[in-house]
Image (cartoon, rainbow, N blue to C red; front, side, top):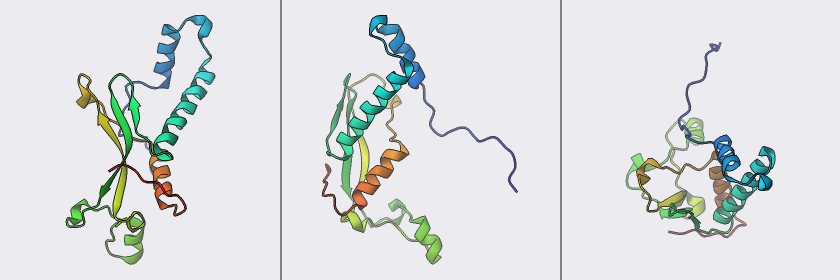
Length: 154
């Protein structure tokens, strides 16, 4: 049925990961102040959750250090004149047998996305911001929840 083949390479390659960050931490911090790798990872995870909560729940704009810019949720009005720019609702399209588009009626015709305003750094075009799938799904669930009254920036 399925061939036993290896998966292809991922779309997004990382230059540095949490292991590299921990090695840098071990080399730069005084040994008396250092924590083990598990605690370091827990601290980083908790910090990242706090930052994401500020962006998603409190609809804040987060200023990044070293003049890297800001991260926020951007709200923009949808344009319905060009069907090539509309996203296809694949589940509804398969069910009905014709192409159905997401019109974002639940958000009043607005679309929302994570937006990074790039700062002033050398070779800034080499950087990109790609939110995790968990964070984009959390944003979608917040927008679909009728009990929450959040408004994000235009």
